[in-house]
Image (cartoon, rainbow, N blue to C red; front, top):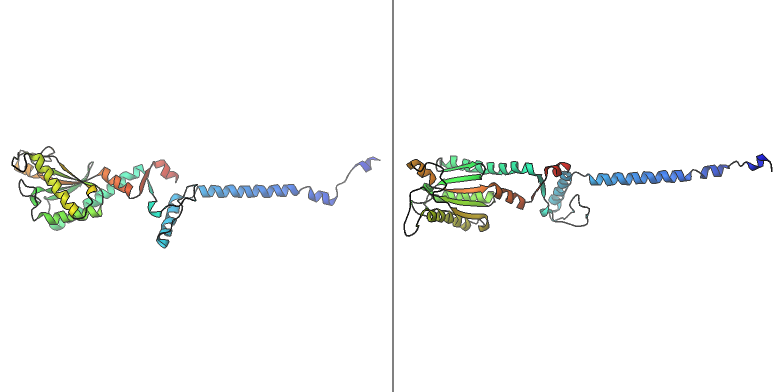
Amino acid sequence: MDWDDMQHTPSDDEEESGGDWIVTFSDLMSLLLTFFILLFSFSTVEQNKFKQLLESIKDALGVQQVPEAGTREGLETIHLDSLKTEIAVDELGALVQKEMQEIESKVEEYVMKNKLQGLVNVKTGDRGAVITISDVVIFPEGEAEFNPEAYPILEKMVELLKQFPYKVRVEGHTDNIPIHNSKYPSNWELSTARAARIVRYFISRGIPPERLAAMGFAHYRPIADNSTPEGRAKNRRVEIVYTRESIIEGLKQKGVHVVASSAVKKN
């Protein structure tokens, strides 16, 4: 056997079949790349776009149930009404402030329309939204039953409580002139009785009792100087208070879910 016989020249068939594995491997890599691109795209769906889609489905189908975005337990169905609106902690303060300003605007509009300046006022601050009503238009002196003039104002408050369904405190306040009679041994009893009387009226007009609290402070939280008749008149008052905490609690019950700012930005 000479050297030429020992050398082997591959045939055309052998040359063609030798590269088949490269084609197969290339196809496999392409499929894997496509698969991981799809996985990545699924994981980065914008949360707000998906929620817009859910709202569209809800409007179109009413009672339809769909899985929530971002869950890898995608087979679990949830009610659309239970979906949470996620907001950042730093956005919560602005949302609460907006609610308080709307309450303030509604009361101011009512006061201007009915010329109640000096008798009813509202302000927003650290405590929340505070509606102050002079005792002159609500109660006779030293009593806890309503004046006839009280009812239109109280009805407006009922309307407000229904429009902004958060928990409120009704606070009674007096001046520093002592009261002592068979009904009310002191200003503590009078201020508390007045607050409780208003709460009972709100309940009779359909406001849920669990949203209401009655508190009496006697003359220990003045807003004016008790040494003058004008100051004492300002101190004799009832306050309806939407606290910031009650508004936050109400927003959470409505479905607002507070998360860290960074978590919202990632979505």
